[in-house]
Length: 168
Ligand code: ATP
Ligand code: MG
Image 1 (cartoon, rainbow, N blue to C red):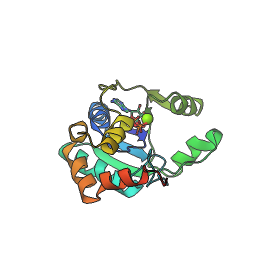
Image 2: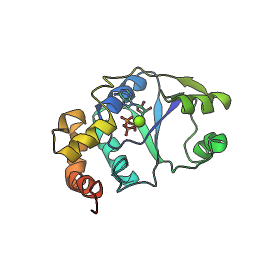
Image 3: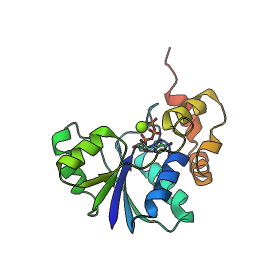
Image 4: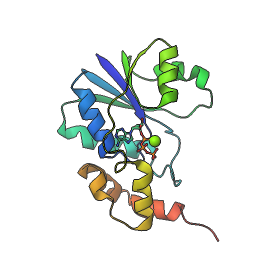
């Protein structure tokens, strides 16, 4: 059984990691959609698709989950989005998501969906992690160690602080 899971992963955090470990018990392979793939260098989306793929690959290296990370650019056309996704991914039988729009679109397309349990959503959220990075607060404990390493390698906190600044 091959499953699909999509997020923007700005950055990939322990909430994502925990969900994927849980999903991994029920499936053979996981296709991970890296959403808003064309976006980077902006406050809500600081990291490139390639950098996010690195975060995912290095984080999942300590699991035995076979996975394919596939970049998915935004298209502003929900009605054809499922075909757009399936045209660029390995085939999958089931979609795991908590996003109501994603669930609705795949259900309408006749694809099985499941809602994975949330993992300390109050603590593990991309928005909160980016805010901490900008504020110069500790964020490292909220992401897998490999993600900290990737963000250090690309000097990601400096980039985020820079692009979130004002030109005034
Ligand atoms: P942002 O605040 O930037 O939207 P996010 O934490 O919601 O970041 P996304 O990349 O948007 O991360 O999320 C991808 C998927 O992971 C979404 O379906 C989201 O519901 C889910 N998710 C995010 N945080 C958690 C968590 N702590 N536990 C379980 N699922 C999560
Ligand atoms: Mg989100």
